[in-house]
Amino acid sequence: MPDSRFFHADGPFSLGHIAGTVGAELAQPERAGEMIRDVAELEDATAGELAVFSDPRHATAFAKCHASVVVTSRKLSAYPHNGSTLLLIDDPRLAFARIGKLFYPRALPKAFIHSRAFVAASARIGDDTEIGAGAVVGENVQIGARCRISPNAVIGDGVTIGDDTAIGANSSISHALIGAHVSIAENVSIGGEGFGFVPGPKGPMRVFQVGRVIIEDQVEIGGNCAIDRGSLGDTVIGAMSALDNLVQIGHNVKLGRGCILAGQAGVAGSTTLGDFVMVGGATSISDHLTIGTGAKIAGKSGVMRDVAPGETVAGYPAVPVRQWHKQSAALAKLVARVSGKE
Image 1 (cartoon, one colour):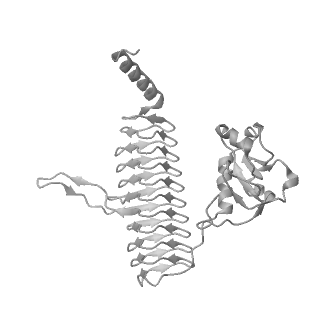
Image 2 (cartoon, rainbow, N blue to C red):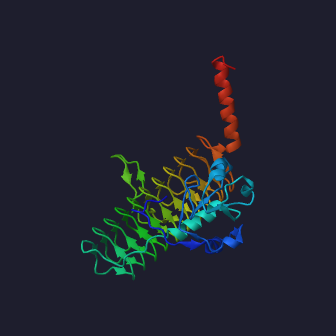
């Protein structure tokens, strides 16, 4: 149950309205008028609440669940349950995520500029935008409508931000063009100089960085991420991509649409990821590579070569996942043989 000190549910909503919102089939249509006040975990849900059953491993909890309604698939609905009505849909997890947004939509900005914020006279601020205490908005910045600039965020000169975008507290953004419906969490650095150096007789000399960061629409960026601007060209984060916390994106990296990078992943400069690439946590991707559309990279991998479209790789250095499993099995047998335990 969400803590009401921090989260306030909209609603209640009728079962018929919820089913229509996500395109689900209500197993007992006669209950369409029943009101649902909140969402809850399968194990804890009670009357008036909605839960989700999307994994057979939770069948025991499903059998004991007292929620008024459970979102599940037709296949999983065959498991025993305790009288809850069912919302049937092919992808219950996706439906539950959409229902969650129905009950807990993102809070609207307050259309307010705090007296302790600094906004340059040349900045253009859209309607109904909120700018928090200590925030700095530089010269010639353009911020769209219904944005939220949280306390102590710094928006550098010339940055543009599209409508309905949220910038988290203490984040620093420079040399960037940011789209609409973008969510940037706390302590994020965007537009800093890339890690580019040329060895010289007196030590490394930094390469000039005069590119930009382009963040397309509907991107989500987690806390403490760093995205470097390009050296001459641009660093690009494609539409609908999602970066977990602590992700590093080097200069001139290009991410396609719908990419997902889990926590602590790092992509070195000038590497290109196609659309819908999935990168596991703590993965390192070397520079000047091409990762094909739909590729999947297992967590803690070290990618040192191009990855073909649709390929799944794992290991350090990363190899096709079946090869990695064979290598791991062969190594285990070798260790067992050496230690006399085979």
